[in-house]
Length: 198
Image (cartoon, rainbow, N blue to C red):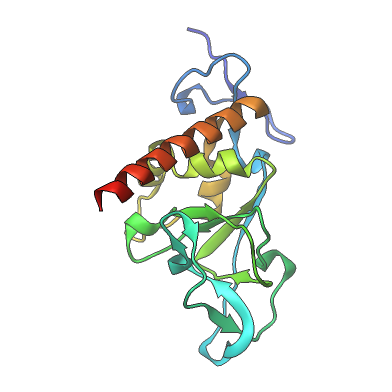
């Protein structure tokens, strides 16, 4: 069978990526790298001397609980913070490095920020107009399998290159919204079942 998937690189010959494509997509879908859909960067490095009771909150791994933003036990710092080290509503906050490999890759969409906040160096944010769909992709078994296969070192992490290079199947916007709504409907039903069992 002839190759049919090619990736364009600036100033280079198109490269066949058939071996990278895990499965065929429905009509009107396409494979993309995450860096084609948005941008990402890692967060703030700070030191013990920067800690203060009244500074800027810094979001860390434990501020993501059950796929939601948890604002208890905030660390606050007083130090220089670049604009791209602040979070905004709609950003995806991602744990990129942790002592537990099961926690690497956990993520949530930031909503209803009560004040200006930054994020720590073992975290990343992803900014895109497709974030509701991308969040569900990042939480999928498919992406977790990609993380597992990409980590060849003893330190389990999600590097910026790994995040940017990840292949994501992208449907039209209307289909993205339908998929996200269906997933949320199923999760809501599961939560109701669990609550009734308690």
